Image (cartoon, rainbow, N blue to C red; front, side, top):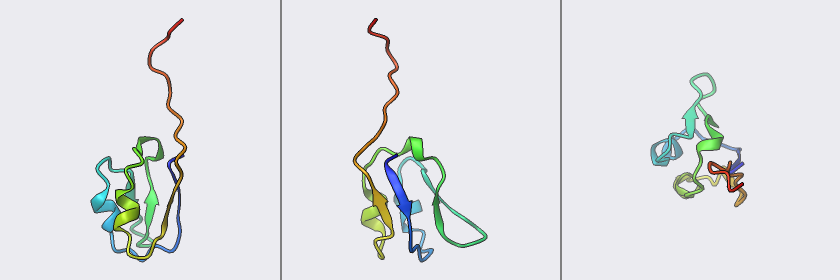
Length: 71
């Protein structure tokens, strides 16, 4: 769970524009950013760094599914 939460969003869309993996989207109803594809987050911190109100909380933990069996 790389992005823990988005709280206090002002709707500037900086995080949406900064995200290289399209993880964050804008909710047309509320005008606020939300986490659309959390599993795709690469923890690059670009969303957090681009947010003018520090609304994005990241965690260093990322569960990585193994793609190769070493068995």
